[in-house]
Amino acid sequence: MNSIVKKLEKSVVEIEVEVSAEEMKPFLVKAANRISEKAKIDGFRPGKASYEVIEQKFGAMAIMEEALDSIISKTYFEAVTKDDLMTIGQPEIKVEKMAPGNPLVYKAKATILPKVKLGDYSKIEIKKEKVNVKPEQADRLIDDLRKMRATHAPVERAAASGDRLEIDFEVLMDNVLIDNGSHKKYPITIGEGRFIPGFEEQLVGLKVGDEKSFDLKFPENYYEKNLGGKLATFKVKCLAVMEEKLPELNDEFAGAISGGKFKDVAELKKNVLENIEEEEQHKLDNKIENDLLDKMIEISEFEEIPEMLIDGEAHKMVHELADNVERQGMKFDDYLTSIKKTHDDLEKDFFPQAEKRVKASLITREVYQAEKIEVTPEELAQEIEVLAGTYKNDPEIKARLASEEYQDYLSNMIGNRKVMEHLKKSIIK
Image 1 (cartoon, rainbow, N blue to C red):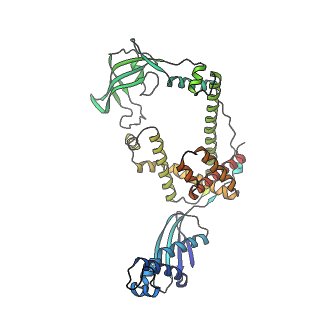
Image 2 (spheres, one colour):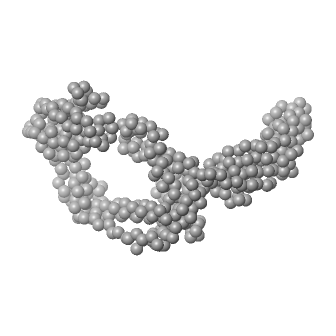
């Protein structure tokens, strides 16, 4: 087999492959056997007719056509391996010459990973920051926990900040009800700031049975673009006013909120503070890694990034957003409608960020190879053991952990982690 590689634009190569008649013989024999097994041939049981019989009945070209996919698959892989090409996606194959008894010639157009020339990252400096968590943050979170267990009792007085109301309301523009602008028995707590600015303040002073009409502007950056910055009339009727009663912050509450894990308020506060510190440290680590990769991208040189890679990353980002939206209880199609976007619109919006993520991935891979970082079988086994313990009651996850494909993914993940550890040790001062 002979192959010639020609470099095209945008990290695309054209590989011309020539396979001799002699090299094709084993493939042709297997192809003839497959035809023999599938076809009905008088005087022969399935799979028992000789090569000569198959050739005489169906023709040499039919055998060659049956063998073509196998020949190309094997020789294309050999050609890519010979020239050490890191191809991505499926190649575009075009047969140039194909005749029985003659060499097969075909051209494969393939996208390859672009080359990266790393900048001197030893000169990058990122200062190490410290997480600074204050006791008040723990107090605020504990107040939120108390609110989650709060009770609400009806009161016969005017509504005040902190009260929960039940209201009917309508939203009109030019005296016309907007789409989805009518709501019945809508629960709202004054002071939570979950509605547009100014709305909750208008509810202060209302009593059960009171009605009120007022005008407010929607924020310029309102998620429903057609309402942003526009003046609307709100008509409200108060159906109920309820006073919030928080559980007392005592040792009994600390035990109840933790399922008996904490014996007193001091232990609860200590644990909450530690959790906040851990979360803040995680955020800081992510920020440092992003800053580090941004600086690496700035000082490195890239061949032109293939559109296939950017498209794929943007597609992945849309799916990540969809998962996040649906975890919050909203249908993704409804979310797209609310922001007046399609899937394709979002993918286009994500292109700049997707290109950046692709470059970060290419840099990580290049550092992994340049620094001769390795993932040992022991490291992979340890990762699998931890995951198996975490998901010991999930047979689907356990089965996935045994698959070669998933273990390759885990190995990749460990490798990326080791690259970041190496870079942080080299760069963060």
